[in-house]
Amino acid sequence: MTAQEYIEEHALTEESIKAFGITHDENYLNIPIHDADGNFLFYKSRNLKFTKEGTEPKYKNALGSHSALFNYHRVRDEKKIVICEGEIDCIVLSQNKIPAVTTTSGAGKFEESFVKLLQGKEIFICLDNDEAGKKGVRNLLSFFPNALVVTLPEEYKDISDFFASKKESSDFVELMGKAQTASDWEASNIPEDFTVDSLADIVREEITQEAWLIKDILYGQGFCFFYGAEGTGKSLLALSVAKALADGQNWLGKFEVKEKHNVLILDKENPRSMIQKRAKAMGADNENIFYLRYPEKFTLSDGRGNASDFAKAISTTVAKKEIHCIVIDSFVDFMVGNESSAVDTQDFFEAIRLLYPRIAYLVLHHENKPSQGVFRNDSQRLRGSSNINAQLFTAFRLEPVAKSKTELTLKQVKARDSQKLDKFMIRMKVDYLDNGETAVSGFEYCGEVEEFIDETKVNEIENLIMDMLSASAYVSKKQIVELGEARGVSEKTIQRTIKKLLEEEELNEIKRGKEKWYTVRNMFTETSEEDENFTDIFDGELPQI
Image (cartoon, rainbow, N blue to C red; front, side):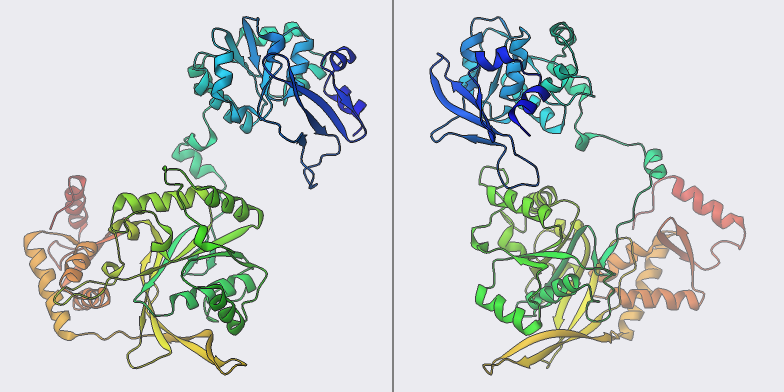
């Protein structure tokens, strides 16, 4: 674009060009910046060759430049002033006899010292017609809560565009007459993130179902945890997940990966030399897998309750490189606060979702060390607050196989909206490197593991169910599992016991939504009476055991 084309496109007049001392060459339009007293400070130059795809910045400031309130020295005695977005819009308003100012660093970086300069004046705010403009309006309203907001008709992107369409000063003054107070403007400009939808709207909406990145293992959005004792190979297993996603190949040769995905690994536990060794051994030298160069510098918080600059910068990287999965190794290295605190763990999950939205997160974590005389089921072995388990979409507990150096089992302990996988075994493949050292080169699927069923435990659960049914007409599967696991009985044994009682016609099973409830067989005759009694009970409070 030539300087003349830019001037015409932005509705600038020759009189304004001269009055504001604007110069130009084939590459830049140079705008002189003055301080509050009219003393020249520096030139701000608009790049006429700027494109979004290019590498050159849109504006170039002279060395030693700083934020200034552009055009203030010309309008300091005016009683009504418009704060606009950018020097060009400010010049366009000025040539239309409308006093205006703007900051040389953008509306989002308004300074307290500028507020003092504008005290006692009636302030109008008119910024660009986009989301960034709305964000800028909110920022300015925090400085000027009594200001009035001028909204351009939606067909115009900014003030220059408005006047370039042959609008006149009187048209803008008319908009100023319709300007909104801060509360009225906020009410009519609710951010997209805060909007609500009716359930009817959601049902009618054509929503693309989220796909599994790895079928039954890692969902397209949400948290998956791999946890286990130290030294169970969690980091190596996570690298195998990243490799499967990056290659677009089924994980362990078993679990489906439909397409290639980019992965970012946040790893504070393993040095760069170890990462290199593992990548070479596993053939994971893939351009679609990324690591932080200086992971030790990464923190989620700046210590003042805000996201750190590093975390926000990584957010840009995630978007630019189209990352679909972030591996966090490990949970305690990246969260801020106490892992046993529901508040602190909630802050971690919310920060990750906000910074890196709508992707999958694979998080590695440790389990509680066993305590003598204290039974914990698999879910309770996950270390930290119970809030962690509540946040997960899927979770797997890793456990080494006794007397084996290469085999371990994975047991799914959390599966949201899907049936849990049966426990399965995998085996590390170990190869020799060129220097004679051994290294894990991958993992292979070895099949489902038949869990041992203790018949004494089956009898114990039978008695438990009958005791529960002696106290209440109905008990839910959830209640049975919770009480059974509290006694140290596995969920699989509990399910086997329920199935046995159903096959022996000791129990009736009734479905209520997704939940299953049980009553003593033939408690009611095989008529509608059973359904009516059941319905009557559940129209009130659910039975408590």
